[in-house]
Length: 186
Image (cartoon, rainbow, N blue to C red; front, side):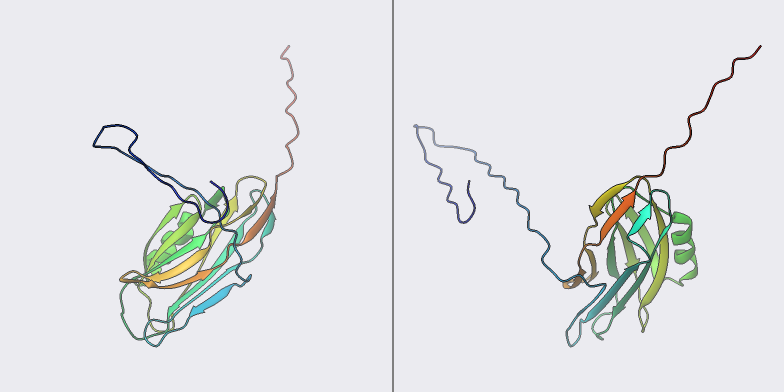
């Protein structure tokens, strides 16, 4: 395999009439989009808007990082559920108590959530004016990493999609604690 177009040819080299072939490929496409914190998918009836703001992207391990989300269906087509996937840095401990309060007090605007290793998935039933919420997480260890992109899409119309670029995080490790000195009992 080489960069560019490749051709794979499977030929019968024997008298066998059946064969099984499997081709697996992996590739990486670097993010080339602009660094923005808000994006709108234009459209007459299925326009969406997503804004994701982290209060800091440089912190110490264990320090709280707050994330504000603003998700909105601007168009009038469809009033069903939307899915917001908010990219998180590796090793982020999401404060589930805050999210549980958001779900309990939202009046079904936020019906539930899932915390995955690289993102927070929010199930939204937005009202006019969109859904605004804030949650917090604590990075567990030092790292320099990029989150997954954040996306918002209409559950019943997944091609209505808006994507925000990944965020770059620089988390410094917490200082090592002083070693404990053992004292022998007399």
